[in-house]
Amino acid sequence: EAGVAQSPRYKIIEKRQSVAFWCNPISGHATLYWYQQILGQGPKLLIQFQNNGVVDDSQLPKDRFSAERLKGVDSTLKIQPAKLEDSAVYLCASSLSGGGRSETQYFGPGTRLLVL
Amino acid sequence: AQSVTQPDIHITVSEGASLELRCNYSYGATPYLFWYVQSPGQGLQLLLKYFSGDTLVQGIKGFEAEFKRSQSSFNLRKPSVHWSDAAEYFCAVVVPDTGRRALTFGSGTRLQVQP
Image (cartoon, rainbow over all chains, first blue to last red; front, side, top):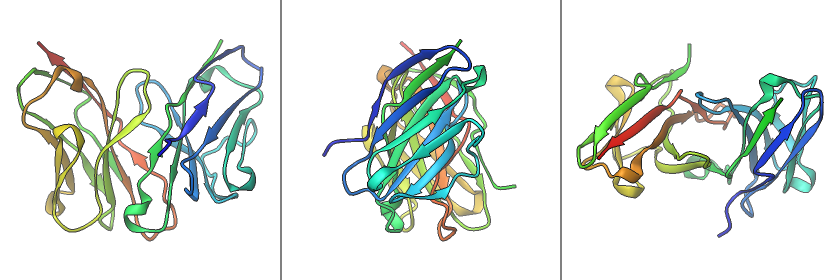
């Protein structure tokens, strides 16, 4: 079974530029998550989708970050304009989310963003 | 406040020695509990998980964890560490029946293995 795919793996941009990340979850997984992991910290949720609807975006800086999940499968996360403090690893995860053990989340390799 | 605590930021053990990484949580109900490992430049790999039932959980790579309700803990153990176990380890929780399925992570414990 294929895992969670993410691209690009690395991105370097200058502040005030825009950037987009892409995620393809495990086939059949209803829930998709984007996490931000700043160096030396644990990942923190940015946004959670259930199928193509947003469940939780309370931690998403909506003045600069946006995300969508078209047709309930792939998702893109965009930052515009980027700030220095956005330098982090952006992790995508997915889960079946039918309750109980299906809540297990599987992570992609992440996209490492450096803002100069 | 609800939280996940990993008290040890950095641990160094000798190869072949036993390992215990600590995790404590502070939630009203017993959450679902997870341990993930992250090697340099890699994503997060699930080691093991606890939902209910037997409090001693076996995972991959020879790891196990024990859930202790009285201590609100879910410590990760391995009887004999290998050099390839050097990585960052994260404890994480999901609080069931809240509608919020996102993981809340501890701050991580970096494991260094000496030859």
